[in-house]
Image 1 (cartoon, helix red, strand yellow):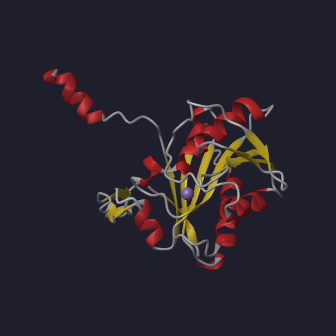
Image 2 (cartoon, rainbow, N blue to C red):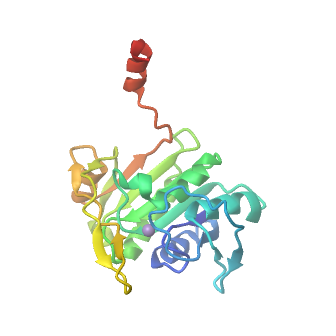
Length: 245
Ligand code: MN
C-alpha cells in the first residue's frame, strides 16, 4: 500500500511526524506538507505565484503553500504513481461539525478524494499533543481496516479523544454536529495605533446530540464521519422547483 501524508499544521508538527512513524511499518509513505502552519486555510489553492517543493533531512517534502496545494502538487507533479490512500493530520485540535468547512486538515484529505483516492483526515480532540502516540496507533488501525465495504473513493473525517490507548473507546460512525456562531473577534491596536482584529475562537457545540461527532468524542469514542462534497440543499431545491422561481 502506498500512502500520501499531508496536514495543515506544517511538516514539522508533532502530529504528522507521529502519523508518518505509525504508518511507515505498514505502507510505503510519502509526506508532502505545508512549510508552516496553515490551519484554517480550507480548500484554498495558491494561484497567484508558483509553488516550490523542498526536501527536509528526514525525507519529508514541504511546500510553500496550502494543504490543498500540497496534495494537488504531490498528485500531479511529485509522485510518479497514484497512491492508494491519502491521509491528513494528525491535527492539533478537533475538526467537528462546521469546523470541517474551514479545516485545512480536512481539505488536504478532500483534495485526495477529488482525485478519486480514498482519503482520511485525522484530528485529536484537544490541542497540545497529549496522548499523541495513542492517537497515531488508532490512526494506523483505521488505515489497516481499509473499509472495503465502502464504495471508493471515500472521504472520512476522524476525531480521536486525547486518552491513553486503552481508555479510548471503539469507533463510532457519526454525522457532523453543528456549532453556535463563532465567538467575537478580538480587537487590539498595532504599534502605530491602527485598530487590528484577530479572528476569535470557534463557537460551542449547538447540535451535539446522539449520533453526532461531538457526542461520540464526549463519550470517549473515536468519531468517524463519512463526508461528501455536494452542498446542494435537496429540500430547498424541491421548493424552488415547485414554482418559487
Ligand atoms: Mn491544524
